[in-house]
Image (cartoon, rainbow, N blue to C red):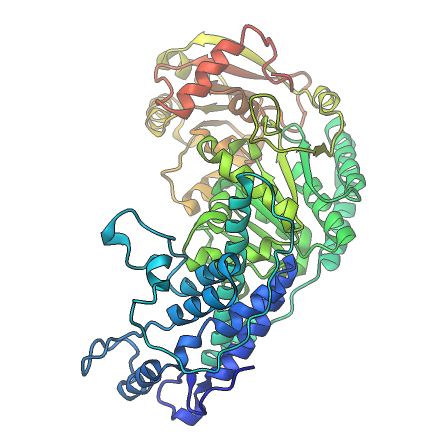
Length: 608
């Protein structure tokens, strides 16, 4: 440990004298310990220790100490320029410059990125534009750039080795960048946690509250499933669901890596995949389960399923993290855990996950290191953005190969993400949890698809009027609104419902609750955009789907005869609407579906 002058401080307390401030030496020691502890999850503790003890070396400069004292006198950290001094003093560049020299070229550069960006975000290495050079790592490490200096002695930096063998070829660059981001995440989280412990002790105590273990979560879910299976009627659909659950639990003992769970819509994959994750995590010593979901309409429903299964452990064991969170769910425990994902079960959106994997800002990066040693379920994996597929799949491989993760691709319409000829970015060694999905799809066949050709809006509305319970899904909000207005004019208004992403989350949940009740007990005609397709548990005997890709058609058909209660098959009508799909992804997938329909009479078959 390096000893600084007795009056070197890291943080002040507003309105308090210097003898109550935090000594810099103590802050560096605490951050060193915590960063190393966080990085232990991926065998980077030696790197984390260096980052922690060097990240705030610049605070030992006389300039920064003067700034602290003057700020304390003004009792406002952001009081602006006074006596020619700036309202902030750069204290991160000195530490970045020091580790860059002390640790050697490659190791030093990786460490320097983390320290230089631990407040403002990861910097770019260089910039092609002169105006953007300021703030790049090269500019900040330039010796000619005058900055406050710190008198020696400086902390020792020993030899640092990567915890894994660097891959050959171009992959090494991605791996090194990803490792840097993981270390950066550990440092940001440790620095903020330690600073909070000094500056906001009450909040720090709240954050340290006890959370349930993976074993406790699994025991509670097992009890829930036991009661659920006893209460469920003995139907063919429920027997298939029990079989899927048994296969998931059996597969949990397998070696960590990539898995796929392809189960038809309504096959019980939400709780079955969750039990796989809990069993697998307990078997292999994983730290948490992360469930990433593409749409907020699904995440709310999925979190409710988990919350019911977890019972009293849900309050502190489950973090629901997305932008549409209901105020009553935004508990204090949820607020704190959303900052750094320190919970055994994370239910979040693909956006939150991808931001953590790729953003440069400190806030999304803070939680990245929590992914190490996790089971990550990618629900509705077919919705991964095609334009981001290459970096996304590369990051998933990195998590499995170097950070002890298991990835589960969970969907009713499994995308072709595995490596094959012409698709070199694909994933390798993906193991099926359900080895024979074709048999499963045949056993759960509850729907037939009828291709109707072109249906004008007038004819479509007339057909909907003739049905007591019917769901229609179209491709644009404007088209949905138009059909709903025309239908409502001709039917009893309280039998017609409209769903759209323009509705706020609370309104959408309210309408869905009414639909769920009315589709069971009365007349219910729903016109919706595609938000209803993935994961929204509704059951209609008849569904109409405007032209789209086969995956969208399969998801729409999953709202038809979902529980298999009809004496025969439900019917999903596939049609060309007056309003064609908008240009881009929807139009492209619809065109592919038109080309494939002659080859696949049953577009719901797994081969299709």
